[in-house]
Length: 440
Ligand code: PMP
Image 1 (cartoon, rainbow, N blue to C red):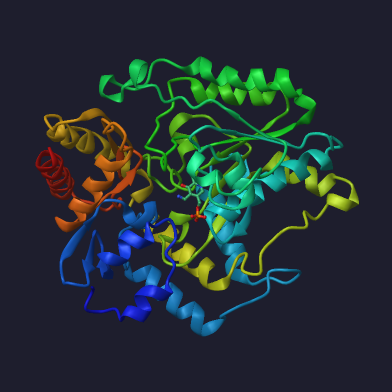
Image 2: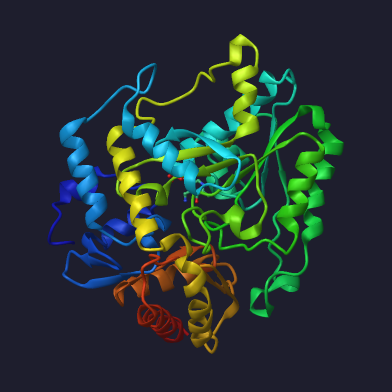
């Protein structure tokens, strides 16, 4: 038992997405953080190979962001978000528009990635209604997609474990197939060449449901939470073309890929494919306080401004939409990204990460090693009858060896802060390789 927690404290907290029974036998606790490292309750410095949960892009406890939060909470702690505003929300929206891909002129604030997804899905349905197409209500997700845990996001998401406990979920939802196929596309052999035609799966659903019933398609440009699934060359472009042909809105869920993770401000910039709505969260405030945002293309916003009265104001929002403290944190974060060139730094680090990854090539049971921007993944051979065990054990062992990585299924994912130095990347891969060799 941890020296810092009483038995009562340990019992009271039902941790999310955690095997609580196992965890509480051997709790792992982090008590402080600075730049690329955490400190654990037993005083070990732990290299943060995952930017917290894919969110602390500028590294931990950055002074400008801390100061912005401190100053704001002492000056204006809360201001309602309905019918009345405050200047920081407008400034923050405008700063986001400045780094957004061309044409994304409007911002709707939320408090998390899940809320950004719900907002975008509702906005898509309401958009078609505003344009007089009230039958366009179906939502299409993709297998192995992760879009948060609210009912809309769980419904369009494509992860059986996240869905199976919760009944039939939203009606009117369907899924296109995922693109992950190691037999044709192992990333170790280079950027996926095969599979652009998988975008045509959307045509199959259009034939089945008719375009007049479909509002939107939501995909992550790179599906990160389910194992860093990099899209085949040409796939996203083809998907966007099919959406445009059938007047279906395309939503990119960029909760992870936004804010420089791929070496460009947004994943859309990296792939040169631009959707109609972009969902964000996480890196928006560098993980400091909860906040999300949906970036909205001009044409979508205009439909609301010109549509019939009953949809004109998009009756949706949260008490804490554009919260002053979150906005101050986001402004401090966006300024830090800009001052330190972090929105493009992953492009410089990507070759270093790719080279470092080759150090783990000799490890046993590796099926594939993938890198894109400053994201890495190692896919391991599953142990028959014990799915996910190898990667989960590697996560536990790595944390003992002072490295934080993510395990998802049989895949280990890495996404260190964008301020990481070359020798820390080498160190990350060396620790992980050591863990994988020792496990064998
Ligand atoms: N969408 C994507 C692509 C995500 O990766 C996540 C979080 N990992 C979410 C949505 C949900 O975000 P949150 O946990 O902030 O609700």
